[in-house]
Length: 307
Image (cartoon, rainbow, N blue to C red):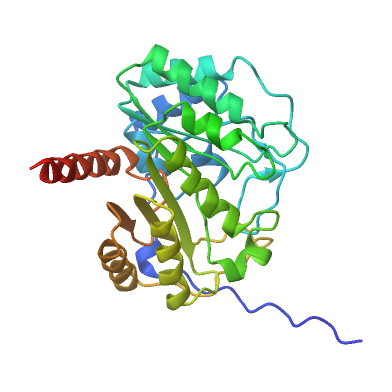
């Protein structure tokens, strides 16, 4: 019997991925953390061990993760716990809205774990969260980052019908790697979700993201970008995969800042209204700034067409 080949030693992290940590939390980080704890909210910033947490929380920005902190899936790249989730908390949308109002956010990103155990996958909870934010902070723009709602008929229509300002759903990686990296998900169904949002709510900006460093080839990434544009996606984010722990998928290679910049130019040439591409880019990093740029570009385009 042949034993499995030993895994290669992890690749040393390159200098451009080293984030300088503060000796002590800044007042902004401390305030955001205190409010998150007080209102009993979960954030993807913490659960996914995001390298940009300090920068975002210092500015009072946190990506809130609704529907609990336990996921029903076990993706090979994700640091969120997998298991049997607790019951949905009906008061969570109100606490989320209170946090948005108290932080004075102009733009908020709301995401969730996968909840395959729920009849609608948690879509109704997203709808209630959007409504609660609009009631408590009507000037705040809302971005949702949803799971795929696979085998949950009507779920995507319900969330898109609530008219978030941005509907984000990440394809994460190229189709060849789905079985290994994203078991339980379907690349084609993720593309169909993004296309469906545009059918239900054409004015809602759609967004998707992917990670590099899992073994994909440049040609596969370009093909993925073509698929996203064909689905009507407005905004794409491209970042470097960072392995959360030894039990997660290993890093196959580090893409350089120059390669990320080349992909940004390629994506712009393919027609995306907004592209964020760098080693430390994440779906919610600089979400407010990028949304404003995307909205301004869309308004300028509409004005040019009117003339």
